[in-house]
Image (tube, rainbow, N blue to C red; front, side, top):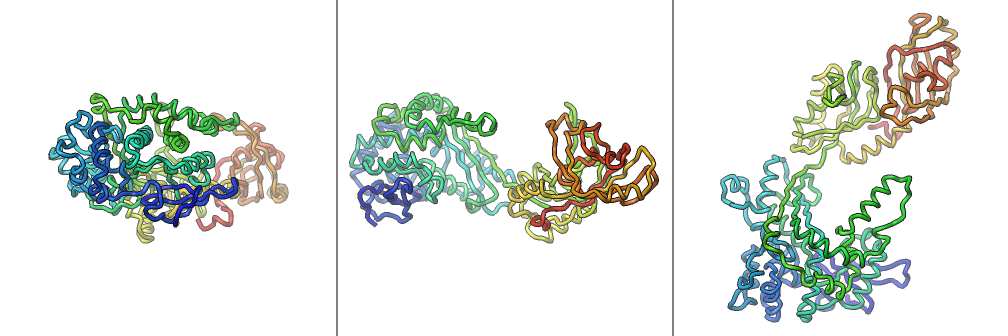
Length: 614
């Protein structure tokens, strides 16, 4: 497929894609996900054989190594070699590929090139990774001191093994300073001036398309399968190579397969604080001049606090990866040449010694759902602690009774208990129970929930270990976040059935009470925030509905039990005693005397029809 005039190019992973501008500005750009044949595109990929055999690259390679101080791997990626191709080679093999271009002097004569940790394009990240083709057993090597300074790959592999995950695969997350994007872009702009035959400049139509895309990013970025930015250069991004190399090295050392959807994740972050601060100071004016004003400052509604905070953070953090990506689509070569990033400044030796590598491992949470019954009073739903010493108010909690049997099985570090509402400490939860979702954070043994039989055994274990809390329908959630949203969405639509023991201030006959209560249907109640929760709830009037009230049991002329069906969120205790007039009308108003509540039970959570299967 040949590129017609006016067509631009977007580089995806391993391909060069054509972007065809549409006639209308309302429908800007159609991404054609077909690789453009070799020789018809700008920014063509090279192979390692091309790099090794093309003698015309000699001067450019020597210049990058000796004058700019670029490491071997960055030399190769600046020549636009794919990241997965580089990852298949050892660091020594990459050096041998460049050796024919270095002549008799080699690449170590220049002080700038003497230490790969001083590479201005990667800050020595690739050198600190270690050999990504080595085998496993890194944990033992580190313990035995076989690596005086453990490589980043060794540290990551050892941290993952120390967690003791029952993993069959892993995913990775890599964080590098955003200023490295400016450095590699500036290096390429500089190289286009020095070696125009090896590093071609951006075609005018690509630059024009890039600037238009920056103004209409939705056409190519957020709503497209191709998420790479428009190509302004012909080299391979640092993050692309780093991802391939890190995944390959970690898979080799752990003996596991990389899977982008794996539940186990290894995160590694690289930073060089002193150089980052210098780059931010030098690059901020460049970014501010290229990023449109609406990207960093937009009008906000003062009543929307979350939106206001988000926009403030966005305005404050001008030197972020997202703004740099936008700027790189609009910056001209002249702007780069005047900024000090073309070529990128050298790394001082003192600053290179401050390089930081941070490794962390994480496991996606496991979500279990079910229904719980609370059969005794005096039990909180979650541990109830008060005061600076966090003294527990109750000895037992629903969460504690459930998680003490489940967490050890999954080897989870912590947990969160989500439920469809909550009952007071002195209220029982009877009937079929209340729906809940248990979120197990950082589980090291995920295979514990691999089948329904395991879940039934786990449910039986919880029920046998507690005479106060029982559970049913315990099962694994395939999509825990969606389940939490479903619980939250049902909060306002569900109904609840209660049983309350009520005390009357005046003696009334059963017939008289039943006559007054049986007529109650869809009674609208206005409830101001109860006094007992004013310290933690905003004071406002809530509209609730009492759907029905029936006498369940008659104990005496002054004591009876009533069943009530109410809307979600009704303060039932306050409806019974009136809360000093803060609930209007109350049960006492209906009976014509003062009323108080002796005890309360939740009999049923009546979920909306779509959620009855939970």
